[in-house]
Length: 357
Image 1 (tube, helix red, strand yellow):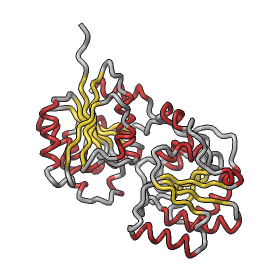
Image 2 (cartoon, one colour; image 1 turned 135 degrees about the horizontal axis):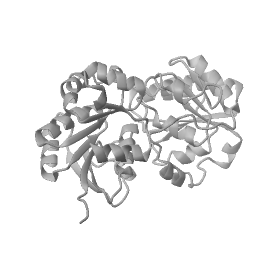
Image 3 (spheres, helix red, strand yellow; image 1 turned 30 degrees about the vertical axis):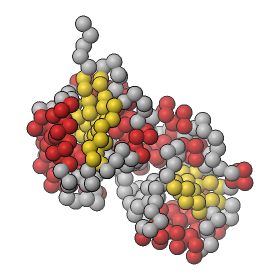
Image 4 (cartoon, one colour; image 1 turned 30 degrees about the horizontal axis):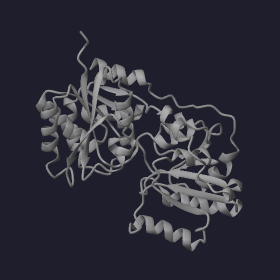
């Protein structure tokens, strides 16, 4: 008689970010002959994230305007109805609520922290984390400092918190890079810098355009491509657009917008630049390194110094230092013939976690 499959519900919002993509990747790692995987999208609609969920996986939606609109009760109803063996989520605001739901339903729960607690902009999450994490079966931290901070903030025993560096979806990336070169023929002679992230103060697009203005003075054929969702009416975006216009950079700074396949852009770029003010563990930077691109990265979290070897496969600069960022952008494209210095968690690491919980 075949063994009964473990049923796992993966909770995530309809948006597309690093945490959401990691949730999908971890779910895909679980062998379908051993696990029954279902996605539960919590939000106004299914959103862009469903583009990244492979066909063949079941998807449920919990329609809410915000997590405060009965979100916990609706999540509880789904878990009570589905009767999973394990539930999983990867964003702080969902984690705390899902832990409560799992506790009430007698279900195992694994949560993954998407950002350091000390850096979250939503401070209301911290009391919830302190209150609820004691009931989690496992908490995944993306890097060592995050591991220690979770224990410090929550008092959890060390064996409940595990460090698992973000995996790389190699098969998916390789498939995406088969797409045609998105740059025009004229762009082949450019220095092409790229940054992939939604527009926000955290992600530092205001810093990169200021640094690029300095780069452009020395490299007139330099171009900056900003991939990521933006709102034309947002004050942050307008301030960046105004800077570009006032410095007559509109022909050299390209607001590409959201693209579900950023890898085709990264593949044909000359340098990947991460100007972030803070990150959990920057997936897009790691993906760029996997694709063999020299990188410039701000030291927004300590792990950057461990995953980028300064002067070998990239250049590390202090956060908010626009001049250093510009100098890094000038020098990084000359870095060649390097190997990956990041060591991700493996598929087997995650299978073992879900198998043995």
